[in-house]
Image 1 (cartoon, rainbow, N blue to C red):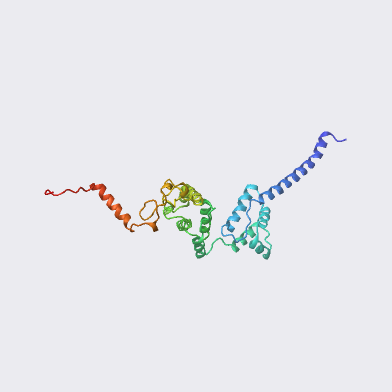
Image 2 (cartoon, rainbow, N blue to C red):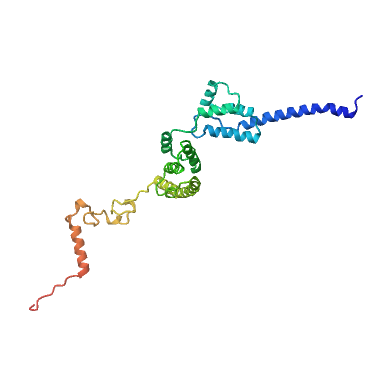
Length: 284
């Protein structure tokens, strides 16, 4: 009959086997989860280069302690589009080092300088795109064309559609660190300057839809602010618009057309000088 020591010893391999199974399961699960951290590489993305893709795999392999075989597996699974077609047309790459060398040769990071200049000159900041996102996108494009930073930054500033006065603070910047800080200030000022414009626009829109209230006009006396039925001079009869007197109309008026002007001038002269007095001669 085996003693307790023998029994414990005989069970030890079973526990070791279980531990190996658990580690294997956890390792496979972790690898599956970590695969999602690697962006798909198509070979056609102007901003996600083959070097960036390789660096993503190397960084995650170091963090999760992937073996060379696991790196190869993750790399193959993350290829899509043109890159996946290329892989299927190639001979089988059995090691990560072999695949890395071949794909680097096929999908070069460097773009034709002329093409990069054309792309950057035509690129504009989108209305819903933050200044920081726009800067990073253009920066990546400039790096692919191996453009000096100050040249790429000029394209970045030109791609922001705003007045020259508003972008004044961005001109002359030659480093991305400085540009990043200036863009924060620019974005804050731009946001504040847009608010009054929006309020004014809304107010103008409201004013334009308000109904116009018609002004009443009396056809009896010609004055504004009331209608004929409510005319305070209704008892005086109809008004003549030729002499401005009541009791008759213009066709019935006996005074000439310039009588109004003559009478008014005479009245004004009389009020200034007073009535004229006729005196007789000294001889009687």
